[in-house]
Length: 216
Image 1 (cartoon, rainbow, N blue to C red):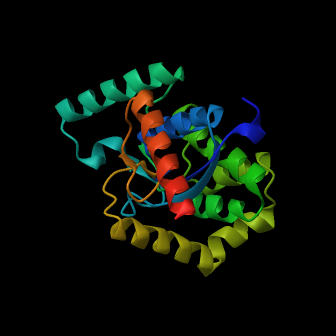
Image 2: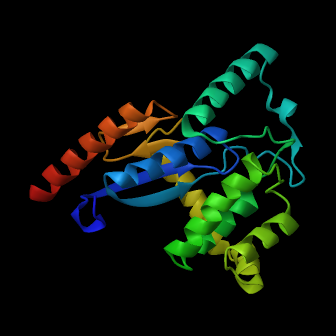
């Protein structure tokens, strides 16, 4: 379908780069571009702010062995559906610097943002890199077209930290309890990862709601 003939679909997505289900959700969102001219407002939120800068063993997340195995089994099934290979990270990374970097990348343009956005997911869940490590993030940023000064500004500018705080406040107002959470309109939302057919149906319902609101 030619890009110009696709209807514009607005979405707001609450996500974190250390959330494996957010990675799967991102891949499913990308599949929607076959049907829509998708415009996403990425609401990046830190889901484990208590994690120290050096990270912690994944066992520190506190899941029971049974729950963890069930969750990993579900994740593997979803990864198989999206035809990607996932590696269980060795550490649960602190995502704050990665999120700040992504927020700053938005100001460098969509191309730079999406290169970094996808690279962060792949670095953590495919390559097994610690995306809480500043040296790792500097290398990823350089690969994606961000300068050293842009990286340092992302981590030192209080406005970047404030944006993450604001994103979290919005998540609270909309009672976001899971990542990813996707809104196609205030009435059409997806909490977590659902089958792609349900994802597409919700997107279409969201488009209808947006078009109705525009007419009104």
